[in-house]
Figure 1 (cartoon, helix red, strand yellow):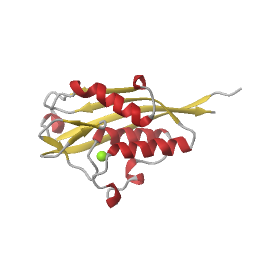
Figure 2 (cartoon, helix red, strand yellow; figure 1 turned 45 degrees about the vertical axis):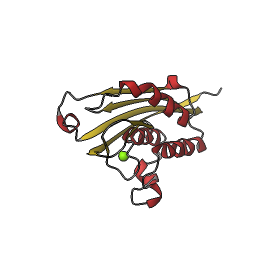
Figure 3 (cartoon, rainbow, N blue to C red; figure 1 turned 180 degrees about the vertical axis):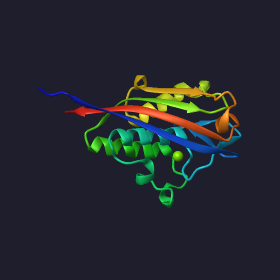
Length: 163
Ligand code: MG
């Protein structure tokens, strides 16, 4: 009798916010006069998601696979990093079950962008949009997120393969 083997992963990332930079979240550019300080495009949500996926498969973390000391990853579209992480997992037979992302950002409001974010991630992962959840919250003006100094993201995933 054959069954399915499941794994759970979680990921976490923080990026600093500064004036005049693009604000990429979940593969979508959010209109804002402020954005994320980073070596890549700064998509803090995709970075947390990549770490969750790598964690589920016990394959290290995003810094191991895409070091920020490597100029190949300078300004890179984080969707490419996510696609590569999914490919690494598929090499070991893993498929993504679902992903659930929580973004803590004081401003701007992300509600108008959530559906496009979910679809964008689902397309890169190669799964149905019903398997991808993106949630947004403020921190009620508390802490570094509340002061608009940074953005914090948590991601949880399941992956599975035939046992
Ligand atoms: Mg990052």
